Amino acid sequence: GGDGVLAGRHVVITAGPTREALDPVRFITNHSSGRMGYALAGACVDAGASVTLVSGPTALDVPAGVERVDVQSAADMHAAVMAVIDSADIFIGAAAVADYRPATTAADKIKKSDGDTSLALTRTRDIIADVAAAHPYLFTLGFAAETTDMQASARSKRERKKLSMVAGNVVGPEHAFGRDDNALFVVWDGGERELAKASKHELADQLVALIAERMAAEVGL
Ligand code: PMT
Image (tube, rainbow, N blue to C red; front, side, top):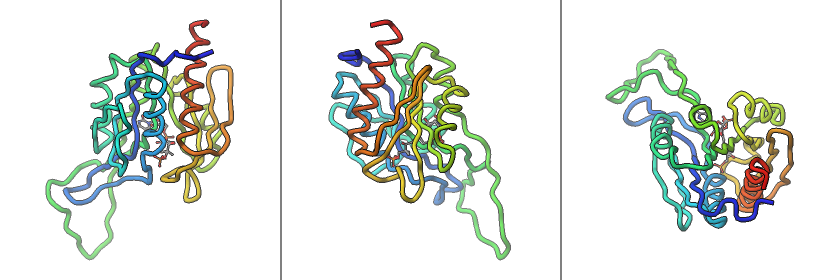
């Protein structure tokens, strides 16, 4: 089942990296291009949903029919998601959100000196865990980006963050980030499925079909 389940639903999706500022000219970030999240946004529109895409800095065009909200930091992304989540039916966290930010952001450019230095980091808030805790009946799809033990991490992230579904992917120089293709290991309560290496657009269509299938199963359609 699952045909037509996404029609008329509101989907909120995060995509891309975040930038955590050290000072007005420097930031900490990662290699996410946004492609996986943007492909999911397009696939949800194709399935008849209305989509709000909360996006970190990317070089991508907004897919047709998608409303994009541009953000920079993890804190900005958290606030932008919370501002729209009350009307959502589905939340997808495809963004590579920074887990830490500089403990302070200097107002002026930090000057160099001759000696070494170090950087104090502080934790950011977990957007998808906060969404799932505040809205237990929302369908939540998270990702797990790992360089090792990907399948075990996908299972444990789903349980720890109390998510409906997690899609695990291996990341690194040869995998996932920035590339056009990916492979996913999808876990939910009572099931798992491997989605073989394919373009991010094909995988997005398969993931959206799987979300619809699981939502239909949950309400017994
Ligand atoms: O953008 P691309 O180049 O296409 O690459 C795609 C991708 C590899 C970035 C994507 O498929 C992916 O795996 N995104 C999640 C990356 C990530 O941050 O994973 P994580 O294992 O650190 O986080 C687990 C989940 O919690 C994710 O859904 C993440 O969005 C979410 N999270 C993490 C930290 C935080 N502060 N808030 C969050 O919501």
